Each structure stands twice: as structure tokens, then as C-alpha cells.
Length: 145
Image 1 (spheres, rainbow, N blue to C red):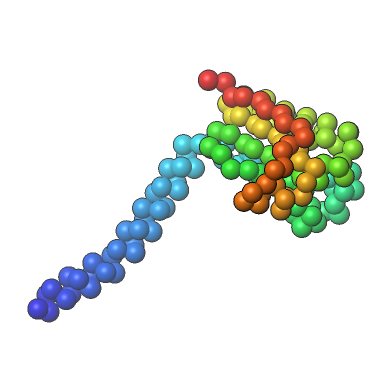
Image 2: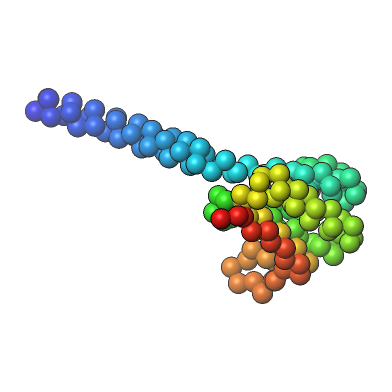
């Protein structure tokens, strides 16, 4: 009876370790398989820097609080950038954001898809469960196959 309890106890202790190890292996293999996983994060930072340069935000943290730019979901070889409150941006700012995304697309050997969506609405209005918000500008650069 004692041996059975010990075996069950050991199995109970090992189960969380096996789950954690499996998750680490999965995350590691995911990161290694897709070398472009950080492109979206980098693009958001670069666009935040543009908004700071145009004095829309005082710094990156201020841009985060004002919820201007977010990286959307999608497969790892696709970057979706969503820009909100476009009515507060002028034509030159929108052009610079598109140029920044184009530079990223070409500097990554056209091996990723980059989509840029500009919305007049605020982020909360777009991500709501039932939203009729549509991008006013949609720009997509498709990866080579």
C-alpha cells in the first residue's frame, strides 16, 4: 500500500513538470520556426516613435495609453498593424506610417505579409464583440511564396 501511495505521489509531482516542459518546448520550437515573430512589435515601436516626433504623444508610454497603434493577431508570417483615431493624424503622418511598414516588408526579404489598417474609431469601438467599424485605409504587402 505504501509503494502505491508513493508512486501516485511521485506521479502527481511529475505531472506539472511534464506540462511545463512541454510548454517550454512548444514555445521554443514556435520561436525558432518563425524568425519574423518580433517584426510586429518592432513596427509598433517605430510607429510610436513617429507619433512622438509629430507630437501626437509625448513618449511611447503616452502612445500606449492613448491607444493609437496595436499589432493584430494572425499567423506568424503575417503582421497586422492597426492604427486608431486616424482623424487626429495628418496626411504626412499616415504616409510615414505606410513607408515604415514598407521598409520593414522589404528589409525582411518580402518573406512576411504586412497589413496596415487605419480606423477613424477608437480601439474600444473596433474590438467590441459587435462592431461595424471598417478601416478607412487598408494597405497590404503580400509575402513571396
